[in-house]
Length: 337
Image 1 (cartoon, rainbow, N blue to C red):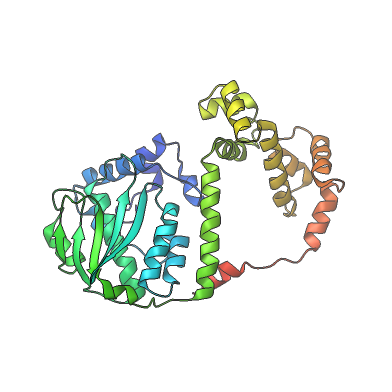
Image 2: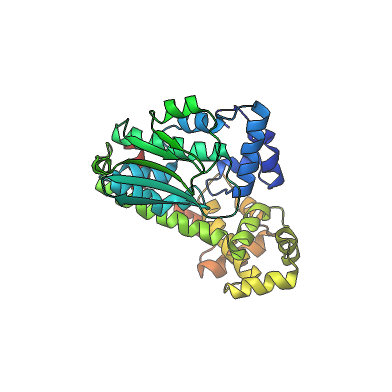
């Protein structure tokens, strides 16, 4: 989108997935692999530019890969960084795995596609060009590539391949995308190595992966729908079943298999949001009740006292305002880095 200067609202494939421009502000938004290939195919055809993947890979900016990149760049050396990228690739791509192969004086950073979605040449180009970018940026080394392996059969541009990959030998029609280089390059120190930050980012990455995996369950989908439609009040079992494409009986059974229920999830979501809303003094308690989908303030008071085992919303707000706030050490470290 950055390279093509396209706005989210112009992407038909996203609209078909039910993803609106506002979803771009949500870091938990995920797009199916197949839909991403449709987006890319549309862009290549519309622009008539088969090198779009290479251009996108070269246009990557620091921080684009977020937590994955922060964990990667704070590793001690290239070997450790590649293993780190492999552990957390799921944050960026649910259908791609990476691994490091070492044999003799050669090493290969391999990128494997794990589903049956056809990978476009532009997607392969982006994967390898952006991987090159991140390695060069944080080691400061160039001209180390011996070979570049592409899964597609025909080069999108031999001239551009030579330029982007420093004249390395290009091999097409390979089983997996890969960068092949001298094994000694694995010992190259990372320019932003920091053991403390690395530990913090890996903890954060693990927590993010766990949250994503939970969101992909039935209860995760229902929780997301509850968050979206709570204020409108359209959150009964029938509404949730319709929006998930299930019958009420099927939805009830699947939630039970995951150890929960619609009423329990609704209660949990309301309780979590209540804590957040009450901390905001700009919201009247009656507004908080409305945002949580209660038709009457008294119903909210009754539910809240059950959650808090005593304190009223007003008392909880007073206590919350009295507590000191703290800045996340992790975000502070990111800003300093």
